[in-house]
Amino acid sequence: MKKALLIVTLSIFTVMGLFAQGQNESSNKKVYLITMDQMDQHWQNVNAGCEKAVAEFGGIDYKWLAPDVKDDNKQIESINNAVAGGADVILLAANGPNAVTSALKEATSAGVKIIYVDSAADYPGEQILATDNEAAGTTAGMQMINELKANGVTSGAIGIINVNAATASTVAREKGFRKAFEGTDYNILETQYCNGDAAIAKDMSANFITQGVVGLFGANEGSTVGVGNAIQEAGDAVVGVGFDKSDMILSLIDKGYILCTMAQNPDVMGYEGIKTAIDVLDGKTIDQAYVDTGVSVIGKN
Image (cartoon, rainbow, N blue to C red; front, side, top):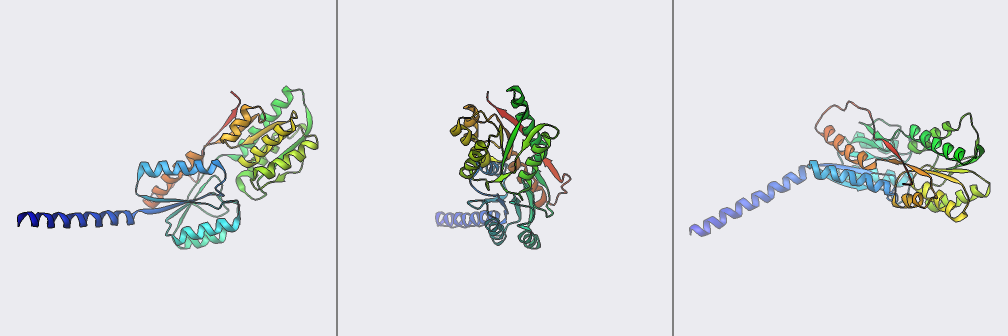
């Protein structure tokens, strides 16, 4: 009889424990990461940083949502899905400054907090964690100028492959890059936009090469891969400088088709983004509106 009573008692405590566990899991706050796409290794690294922070701090139900390609409507759909899924915080890398504004207004009306990683929309958020893209673009331009002059090339045409004319981060990179060439004898041609697609960037770069450019700048991962592949295929002495870090870009640098790339710290963006999300959910005041997550110049060893 005592044994039977013990089994019943243990069963009750087991059920209570499972119930409590379920209560704890359901009480976890929901944080969604919404990036521009799933293609670039850059976004995978942002996600990795988020996952590291979630594992370290706990108390968060975390999910990465992203369109398969850069598309405003698909990003809006991701935002709406996050809200419908009960998001408390959205970490967002916005495609452009205005395209997702209506969706963000609806999200904040539903009580969702917005934190920007890498690229902000023109809509208030709790914080922006990103590279100083304009300064990094100027650094990229100076790297190209120094290499061209070292090769005895003091003038000539320069081509730029960018994502689009709206994404704030890459627009700032181009602005900084152009600033580096002010007062020089180099001529920067009209920017070509590839929407971050490496294959399209390669074709655009090849067209620039046929026009006799002496340098090519890729403003993001896909653009940079396209620039490097075009230089490799053409076999011409064109100086390629890029942005972002991936295995493919590092391989192109190692083979000498890309001089260097401006490497961001996407894992830091994700990690610190989750930390900020936790602070926001705990009701803490966010003192820093902008956090510079840094950039490094990576060239051939």
